[in-house]
Amino acid sequence: VHFLRSLSKAELHAHLNGSIPINTILELAQQYSPSIAHTTVEDKVVAKTIERLKSGVSLDEVSDFFYLFPAIYALTSTPQALQTATCVVLQSFLKDDGTNGPQCTYLELRTTPRETPHMTREDYLKTVLMEMERYPATQAALIVSVDRRMSDRDIEECVNLAIKFKNSGRRVVGIDLCGDPLKGDMQIFTKHILRAKEAGLGLTVHIAETTKNTPEESQLLLSWRPDRLGHATFLSEELKGEFFADTPQQTTLPDCDMGITELQTRASDANGWYKPCIEICLSSNLLCKSVLSLDAHHIHDYLKNDHPVVICTDDVLPFRTSCLGEYALLLAQRPLGLGLDRKDVERLAKMGMDAAFLRPRT
Ligand code: 5GP
Image (tube, rainbow, N blue to C red; front, side):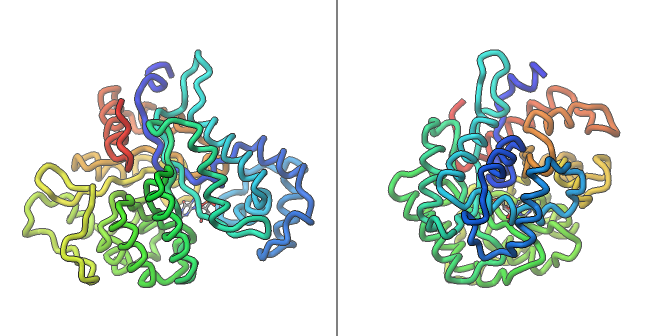
């Protein structure tokens, strides 16, 4: 544990509302009254889930964890509750109690700006940023998530806010595409995503999370040239082959047809080839059953090909993990872990730090 704690590690794929410690969720559930909610989501389901949380239900049944989010959203629908949640999440990753050291050295936390009866999307981001900016820029930064189910107007609003906050010197460093992997029309995102990139924001997208995500969809997302890819569990062998190619002739990834000749990406290697860092979330994949065992995990393809990866938690609440827990899986012997040696783990940790949107100096 001492070895893992002492490593410089970047947590680059953590969703705010999926990372709230269970004690905080239970506290927020106790303070919650339906009059706070007035949410547009299915109130009955939410009320039932919150009742179950209040009575200390076990989270063991969480294989389709998306059902949890509406209840968590109801609990964090006021600025005060969101502020509490953000504060606790930042602490859980970054707090150094003097003896144990923090879970990670640098955190890029992501969240979807949400309009509620109690706050606008702008208020939402201000609340999160206020807590985040209590930490130095070398420790914490924000990625604004856009959800696959959003309308054109919603995406536009979120991207506008991200650009506005970035341009006014606030701690927004990137855009993330997230949400139910089977929902939404990805075409409508293109023009907004490219605007974000032109404004200098980093880009990460959840891609190929299920077997139902088509190679055509992956190609479209890759045509935006994201700097990092979330999960990429079911990326086709052909598309993976594009990343592992070491000659330009082999690269046939389409370019985005948006009148931009050269898409900027930070994900180029020394030769200028496109090598987007893969955000790997081992426990998340196992618990969602998208990967059946660590031996069968797609991380092995990337490690074999010396392709950049970063080890992340995704949602510590439903997946009951931590940054150190994910790194411990790297060291643990097979089949419980990946059986890597310390040098490999050090190399992976460095790759993660190198893939940060805001490069922290260490
Ligand atoms: P938030 O953005 O509200 O802070 O965090 C929760 C949201 O993150 C969820 O509603 C969901 O849209 C997204 N999310 C969390 N984990 C995953 C994941 O593994 N895959 C995808 N596609 N989205 C996720």
